[in-house]
Length: 125
Image (cartoon, rainbow, N blue to C red):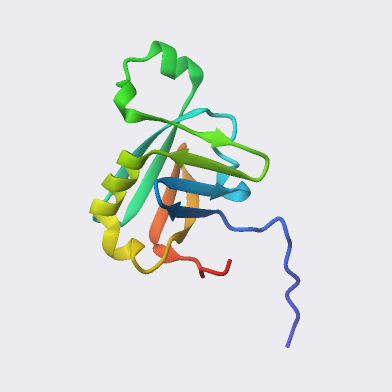
């Protein structure tokens, strides 16, 4: 039986869906940390929440409704999107999943951060 040494850099991205907010660990936040604004979408069929980073230039110059944009607060150890109405929409779509767990794996693809509600993370992580 061989030993597999675990590299601490191989941490997985985790998003915690809490009352009125989505919180990202530093690994999940890596792809978002230089942004202050995001758009949030849901894919009910695939049970996924999608986060699209919005640059300051896009926020100022592009024709994106400000009603679709949320603030992203970033610190050294986590990032957070806080908005009660956003969380109500997420609960309406995914309340059955969120009643069981609130921590999920994330992945980054094609400029978007995905929160995969099919991949729960143990609540003690």
